[in-house]
Structure formats: structure tokens, C-alpha cells
Length: 179
Image 1 (cartoon, rainbow, N blue to C red):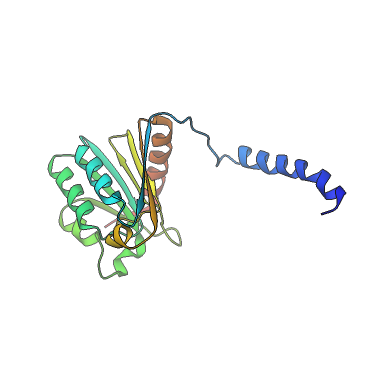
Image 2: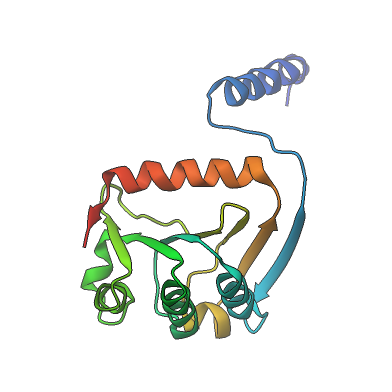
């Protein structure tokens, strides 16, 4: 790299940083609360999700790309039977898959919505009682737990982070269709 290009590098780095800061898309959060980290295969991610769902007292919001996990689906159904409000948004193309949770949730009277506005609705998010956020690459599937290399993060007591994910959830819910 030439000396002239070296002198321009700080300028371009600052320009890139300013474009991110002023784009309205990047949001910084304080590291409040507790964070749990899980990896798969066999890292306990499914058990962590089920545990948090079982602790829910009034509301669970779910965004899922692929959803075939019986333990997680069963935990959501148990929550609904405890009068916890459960709302699930799934990728609109999931209906084409042979095995998925869409029909299970529909038959169980869980509120299910399909997001087909995007090429892929690839979010993997669970929000429990407006205070616990679960997210990561981990799809809610048996393969994610036992075969894939995945990650899962559980954030507790970080209100600004949870609020941002809730806002995103409701943005997607607004253009999703009820199934």
C-alpha cells in the first residue's frame, strides 16, 4: 500500500464509523444483567430454552426460521396451558417443509403467524416475560442440538436489549399473516 493510501486510512475508518452511527441501525447496549452461552452439538441449548419457557408467567414471543424441536414445542404448549400468551412468527416457506411446528401450533391453538415478506425470515428469537432474550444461530430443531455447530445466547435483565428485540418482533408481526 502506498504512503498516500496509508494517510487516507484513518479518514475512511472515521467515515465508515460515522455512517454506521448515523444510519440509525447500530445501537449500543450496556452490558447489564446476566448472559448465558451455549454451543452445540450437545451443548444444552435445547434444555436452556425449555427451562426459560417453563419459567414464563405471562408472555412468550417467538421468531423461528426452522422449528422441528419437540421439546421446545411441547414447552410452549405447556406455557399456553398455564395461560401464558404465546405468539410465534415463522418463515412463510415453512409450510412447504414436511416436518415443522406450524401445523402443531395451529392444532394446539397457539397464535401462529407466517412472515413471507422477506427472502428468508431467518430470526431465531424467544422473548420471555419482557425480561429474558434468547437468540443466536441455533434453530429450534433436533439437528441444531445434536448435529450442527450452533450458538445460543440467553440475556437476562437487560431491558434496553429486550425492548429492541421486542420492537423488531412487532415490526415483523405487523406484516406477517395469521395462519
